[in-house]
Image 1 (cartoon, rainbow, N blue to C red):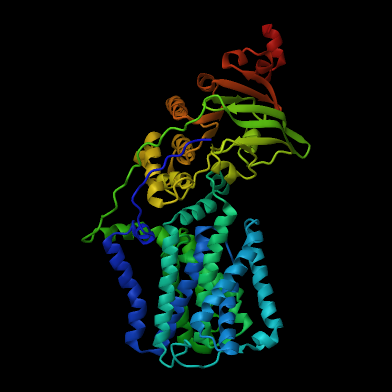
Image 2 (image 1 turned 120 degrees about the horizontal axis):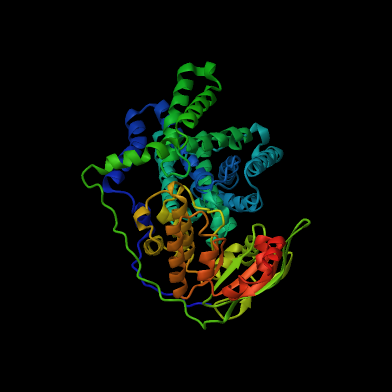
Amino acid sequence: MSTRPIIDVPRTSWLSMALFQLTRPQVYCSLFLLSLLVAIPALSGSAFLIHIFVTICVFAALSTAWNIVGGYAGQLSLGHMMFYGIGAYTTSLLVTHFGLTPWIGMWIGAVLAALVGAAVGYPCFRLRGPFFSLSTIAFLEVVRLLSIHFVGLTGGSAGLIVPLKLGWAWMVFPDKVNYVYIAFGLLLLCIGVSLAIRQSRLGYYLTAVREREDAALAAGINNSVVKLKAVIVSAMLTALIGAFHAMYLTFLEPATMFSLGTSIEVAMFSLIGGLGTVAGPLLGTVLVVPLAELARGWLGASASGLHGFVYGVVLVLITLTLPAGLVGTFGPAVSRWIDRLPGGRRRLADRIMPQLRQISGDKGAPLIKADNLVMRFGGLLATDHVSFTLNRGEILGIIGPNGAGKTTLFNQISGFLTPTSGTVALLNQEGAFVHPSSPDEFARLGIGRTFQIVQPFGRLSLIENIMIGAFLRHPHVDDARAVALRVAATVGLLDQKDVEARNLPIGALKRLEVARTLASEPSILLLDEVMAGQNQKDTMGMVALIRAICQTGVTVIAIEHNMQAIMSLSDRIIVIDSGRIIAEGDPQDVVKNRKVIEAYLGEDFVDAQGF
């Protein structure tokens, strides 16, 4: 369909990309604070302090792993301890029955947890809101009951005792400080994976899916695949932690290994610290766990259940006063303060990618063939045997009264709706017409679309929003950012590149929607009322932008109610009324058509004017 540019740019490692936003003081401060989790218990020699710090590391690691699914992807899993228990039981059983070291067994448990996560996630990710959370609880309960039922294997409700083979090979130590080192290592592993994901294309994709699933699909993101990747990584990390914790506790029983209460606590630590942030789960755990453990240590048996009360109080206070969590609220201010230290304020320079080559191809050749599209919603006929052909290089305008079926037609030719009958054929790179079946397939074949009601990724900055579109053709973060900067400059938004999308006015949001779509380098651009709600100046700017886009070889279909703008832009006009095409052709001829005037102004007006 088009010729895509190939631009060679220098690559950076995933670690460099993960750390590219961190200044030297931030790195030093982070390492210093993390080192305290090892230094304090190691120097104290207190068994109680060692237990507290092992617990902090374990729960911080669990919360960090959970945050990949619950924070980044926005999927509130309340059955996550299922993977913890799988890792714990798999490792313990391999030690008990086969004498296999837990250093190997924990990875076998992680692989098993990943398989279970994929099997559970695939059907559950089709659910939304509370139904997804309830389904994860149901799977957790099923696994717990299975562990109770198979008494000969798991010990049932009586539990399973881990063989006490001492030494590093068996991860059981008389000197308890060794547990701190392993727990700290697992915490670093989880934080490192979380940081790498957050600064990678996968991390941006997960955030996009969390914010706006439809807009993510339009950007070419396969939502199910992205969420499955997140749950597989999260399940493996959770299983590794469960395996270690089983060796630390040396006793397993289903109520503890598959605890719904613990699943909720792990999610709560992320919520307190800041959902979707790298440091949030750790900070939430460091704040809450010591309070609960110290209270139980001081009060003894009389404090049974007190940790739940502490968790609840902290959660209520944070939710009421700091809804974005500790990191979301105070993180930017702390980062600015650290940056004022010597060596701060150093950032990698922004690189703007050179202009891409224009899309090539024979002007006037068919790109889309819509044949007899019928869309029924119950008894409502939204589109009624609509057929048209889109030709390369043209601007096709679609007009009609409100409720005529224009957006429904857009949804069919971009994959968001499957026609009740009829077909949509799209020209692919090899020059053959194909019939894609999903929005992300349409996007990968060169269809880019905006939405009638703008759908920004509100918690991402303007430049990050545009990067979501750029990732479709440029998988590396530095390349995508360079493309996004170029597109932001093209649409006149470069000066607002670091502003969160939710803080932009409507005019800028409309341009952002176009910019995000344009960054995916589409061959065909579907614009759904991009001039609606804008003032005259913004409208003129949008008209000029669309003309400039078309000059690069992009073919445009535009739905618009601004008749002056759409008539001046379009090479050809299609008029839809009650789901049917009532007129098609040159704009000047279409506006004189009796059926068109009748559709907009009514039959009585037409008769009165003598048309």
